[in-house]
Length: 461
Image 1 (spheres, rainbow, N blue to C red):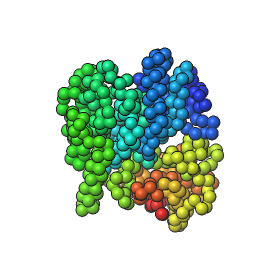
Image 2: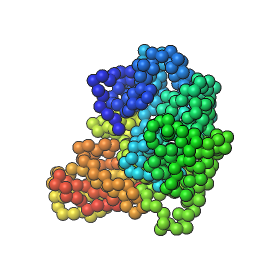
Image 3: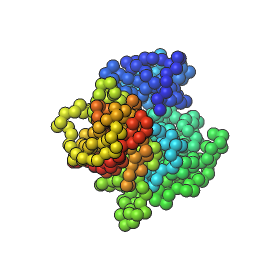
Image 4: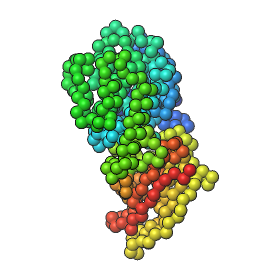
């Protein structure tokens, strides 16, 4: 969630104009910034007290240099930084979506398929991070953002290059107690396998809504991390062995991130087979995989991030632009289309019957693929001239929650005379393709609804 800037907040940092608050932490505050070209970024500003510490500045400089080397789909990339500024700052790619901690708080623990999808995305993220000699050091639910196309690991603020490990020695303990590894909690040098332990703790939280080593005073939590047994009651059997492997006290017995990914893939394949043999027992969800259960976007099914499916608009209308449109790119980094007929793949136009006169009447629907999304357009007549908005809800196997979207605040939608367009992410062209079915209707100012239509969304290539 983007908060309003306070009077004490800066308005400009480096080349970025700050437009809102994203959060704060032990190292600094995070703002939503915009570049001169309209590109959204997350700008972290270091606390003044830390900025005045030469030793911290030296460490921060090393960590920023290390973080710049990290790339991959499941990390928020560093795009800019100034470690020598009076107040050091770091800018990363902006990720639109709730954190895992917010999603679990609002919607409860994840389903089995979503847990496995989360595990796959995080394992891939750590693989990319570790491949360039970086240890994150503070992997926790609030540092995992649920984007439209999968989770993103953020906040390399206390991550450290493996070759700079001596900076982490001397009994200094940095991180979040509930998600630390035993070696980190004891103040020992840490490596990539410390992050794997944290990954196990994050997955346990996502599966149960509880911290596996409990809450309370930090010293007590750290003692349980080092010597105690994690609370894994309620973790689904399909995910339990993976989490247990991560939470082994001895780092030498934990799997590397790449090895963990192989285990996740095997568990997903087993879940897919079971679902195929007993489809009636499969959990209801608002997406259905067409190729493989390893789709990271499955996390959206159980976390409330599904409601963000209207954020990545694929067209533009100047007076009603989304943040991604203002930047000229979608959240996945692709250029946003501007109606070029060569970039769309039309599906059938369906004629439909409508309700009584003067109530808005849907006259047709139209879908097309653009990038990784499928856009659905609804055409309607409005005899009374008082159409007020669109409603939609998932049907069949779709658990997309009901959305009531007024035309006055269309979000990512495009509202024009007698038509409205909305995109939903389907993973088109990514190898992780989904189908989706929604029931949609137009409502007027009095709340009367048109006869609804069911729209089937699927990639066309």
